[in-house]
Length: 328
Image 1 (cartoon, one colour):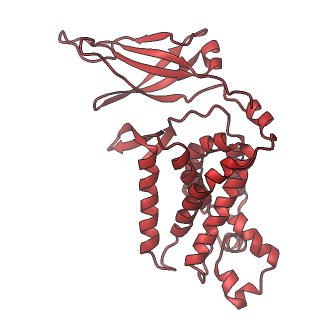
Image 2: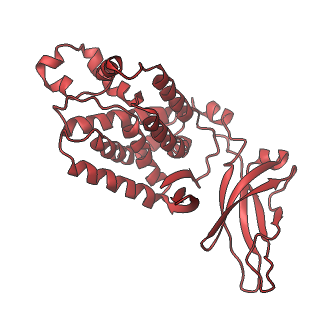
């Protein structure tokens, strides 16, 4: 299952989340090429539990290096697929969590989850002499926060069936809950040194994210994020949208809702929509004309249910113009 996007609409651009993604990519490109230099680099800046528990290893590192590794390992990745998977999950789930916490609190929250994931790994692998790297523990914390903040959201998920893409919306609590159970099973079933995946880091990060996000929401805002939030207000909504249609017993046409921002309604836009009618799911391109008003109905001719005469009904999409982000 590949998550494409969530249905919880973020009204601000995730400045910090995208900056974290950009920093991870830059560090990945800056890393040494595979070989002895890269192995030394990971051992120095990755998290190696044995550096703290084995005296003859510990003596080769300064206190500053030991502390710094609990932060630096979060920004290192071992290969293209490693960073691609991590950054995609962060892109999907970090956006709305930052929207709820605000940029500054989100940054602190992300780093806290990353450090906590390292401590969780260290607790269960205290003498491991293999560096762990990657943002997955911190991202697990973001996912743990998401499951509490947006339990009713749905994750638009791509499920490849042979060569045919099948898009389905999965409840966030099920998608993330299933992911966590898999991590816990793998963590509980792996020995201290027989896995190159830091399963306990995933588990620890997820739990700390769940336990701390409510506390972060209660922390008083200093107001420093407000100008940034207003400047980062989104002008566009998600380009790909899954439309759930409905019909009456006497109606051969399908009816659904398409969401756009005030800017898109004014300037016009194009959307890709995935219309679900039973097991039939297809992608279509929809043009939203300039000057569209809230409540405007767009007609997609011939995309509805089959008719007895061999033709097809239509799809009617009611445009919903999202409200702007209120001043804080």
